[in-house]
Image (cartoon, rainbow, N blue to C red; front, top):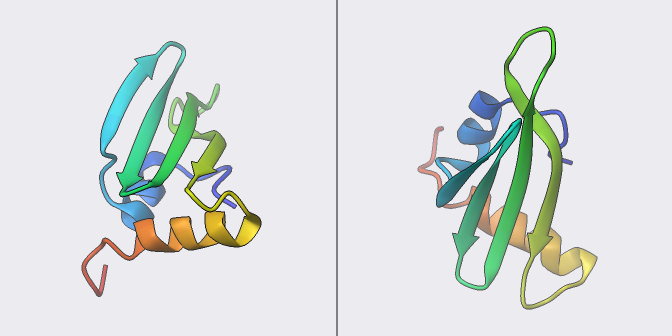
Length: 83
């Protein structure tokens, strides 16, 4: 669902990450909201040098497909309306 998005697109959807880690050649963004966490692995495109999502992992206290979907929705709802 989030694979292939660029940094700017992720920020537009989820806002700024709670924390970031540089992990050359890529980086990892972490989003947290209560017991809901989202870890996103970003790597640079060889041609454009822009970072994009290669993989992500959603974790919540309800570790079902529905629980992970609700977790993503909860993270997205943190943004102000109209963004």
